[in-house]
Image 1 (cartoon, helix red, strand yellow):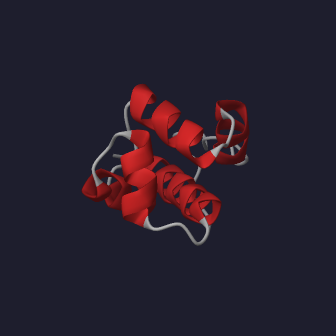
Image 2 (cartoon, rainbow, N blue to C red):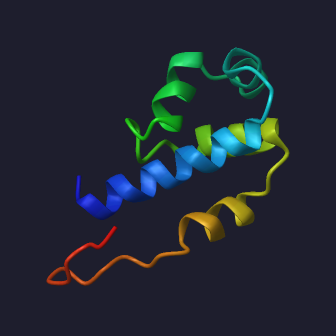
Length: 87
């Protein structure tokens, strides 16, 4: 996994966490049909590239469009291979 992929996964996890708001991880995971552990891994960036259908189910459970998630995660484009990442 590249540093950019890790950063993108962390950004995606943060988006899901904010969208979840006050709802529990267990509640949202159950609504999406995934395990709480899967959601925990995604939210913490430990699963930076979740399967499409997992993302779609979470988006539906959180009432967030896939387009909004994709746009928010793509705010920073991938750096060129020889370009260093900056925080």
